[in-house]
Length: 364
Ligand SMILES: *Cc1c(COP(=O)(O)O)cnc(C)c1O
Image (cartoon, rainbow, N blue to C red; front, side, top):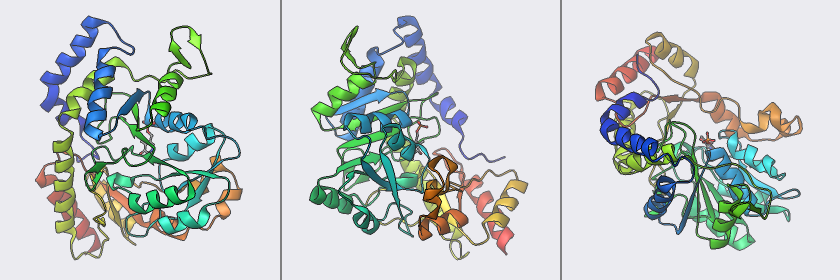
């Protein structure tokens, strides 16, 4: 059996460090907003190159708290992609704003800057790109557009921890960056967790308050906030894993490039690295007219595979009937043909060879 991700091998490699870190938390018994959360916030801020990084309960909450801190609300429009996990747009709906979905680039599957420009209205407050599958969106063009139109640029970095654009980390380019530590993400904990980055001291102050019941001083509540804290045990685990993140991402790139090499000449469209930023391959995603046949053959050999994402957000019931009439031809076309293969830093070369042999046989 070849799984999509193998969290156990990584745990076993780091077991001594992780077990010690968890035991220390148990001994310390300071489970909420203790020393590990504080240290992780400092260490991630330093790694990502931002003055402020604030832990929270999930990637979904990171997006929600970022939008709330920026004062985005009812009557505001936020331009984003429909080819993403639903959390990106759910967060926009949580604050009462309207997600405006635009089409994607046919090669990278990231939001298309030309389509963003065409969708700007007087109600637009922010642009929310996703660094999909670990490849940075076209931040140079998006930033120029946002500067020109005085819009906030909020990055969904849930899949891109450690990716950079010319040396600047994702999450350090826009006004706000939102990360997820869901176990299968490039930097994952052993439960739920998230992080918000910002260069703005004002936003940082608001987020610190919002994540903890709108309170800066205990039992003084200035605004209605939330219970959205990263817990101490997860922070301790993340501090261990943060020390290895560059190695994890280098290994993900090794797996991806080996797949590229072994799938060359098959007619299957392998991931396009546009060279704008460094892709950290949260997912390895292919396009083929024969997707269903290929996936069936993989499953028959106990090889996991998955479609991210089969139903784009404008076609989700949650966003209502009106949006299903939106014309997003590239998004629809990619959703109909894409599929993702197993990828994780520790994936052995034999597995990559096995997976690609099964694919080659299936389409021979
Ligand atoms: C995983 C993910 C999220 C949500 O993160 P959670 O920690 O699961 O809440 C948001 N956006 C994208 C693009 C994701 O992949």
